[in-house]
Length: 507
Ligand code: ADP
Image: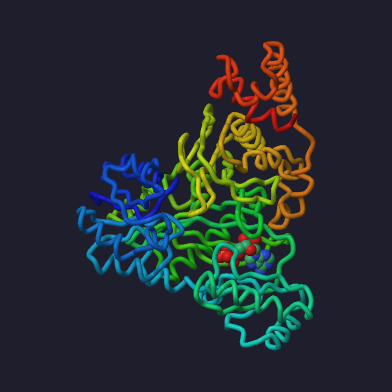
């Protein structure tokens, strides 16, 4: 077994890896930028080393420095988490060449599937269906027009090096092609340093369904089933669940087999995810493979009982996978990404100090967070603060439980996506599982303009009582709201928190 793992990441995923290490009896080493000196992942790791100032280009992206730190502290492996250096094949190779274990797939496998066009070519060669389209970079707008006419509008222009929804443009008519191609290329060049863009048929109303695979270095590769990630805004996932309401056991078997076939063809080991579009008619198309642990891995953990991050470490140590090849999901799990974004204001990023945090608890609730009360939230990194994950025996129970857990959650000091998630859990279409990748964009206006819920009405009543109380005491409403003065209305009194968190905004 590995003895000491350095974690080249931050936030909730760094803490997730620290926890896996502790449970396996493996020492953990955190690295951090100045912005994260007091972060939970730094405190919880057995050792922590500063690597630089806040910008990730001067800290979390400094691969060679991170490898040097690992050597210096005597770590025998590096876990990259997701984002940052996790899908850079040069980094995986450099780790290996430094005599360290890379907790991820071989550098060659990352390179083989790193470009969307290369992955599409590999998929086609191994009988894995892909969205109709091209595999070559477009030369110019007239070539794009000719291809679009062949497949029929709408089409999607996509960056070969793409990720995070960047460098993608839907084109619905010929007149839009030149502008969209320019924009996609510019965005791709800025984000990935590579402006290669190709064409796919734009599929209307599909679901995003992905398969988690896990493989060891002894030739075993298995599927852990699917996750439904259709609740997306601007091609970014907001809510994920496992299993998918649209996947039957037969379809699970078929998609799992395709994902395993693709992973084997790529020479894959460790944890990875094959993303597919599932069309309304039940046909599915391979999109890409993510060669790392995913943000949404916990929903799979909750319905399979498999600790994916522990297995990443175990297979990297040379252990054999001992998980049965055909796992039937048990119950239902849902994850909400809690971000520092103000949904009511166009998801504007919010910054500041988390002055108060109450974490939900009770049956079936899991909280994976990179922040705590007192944390400063800035603009240097991704706005995801935490993941709230619940398990229920049925989808309906999981939805109710998520709603209840979101009501318990209180975060003061910054705006978050909490209320957005509450609205989704209350939405009849979401509750019926009638979602696709365009659902959220369609639904957002009515979701955010929704009438106050029972819980809000209750909280508003509490707040009104509080204010009336304060007024009787001669202090005025603003004193009650800001919590100045007497004991009951103090900033940290539970009444003030409820009023602030839920009620006052409604008033
Ligand atoms: P990225 O790597 O940037 O995340 P993906 O290829 O994974 O890009 O696509 C991101 C999202 O964009 C998908 O989850 C899906 O919602 C949407 N999408 C991608 N390709 C298509 C397509 N051909 N038709 C319709 N929607 C698509």
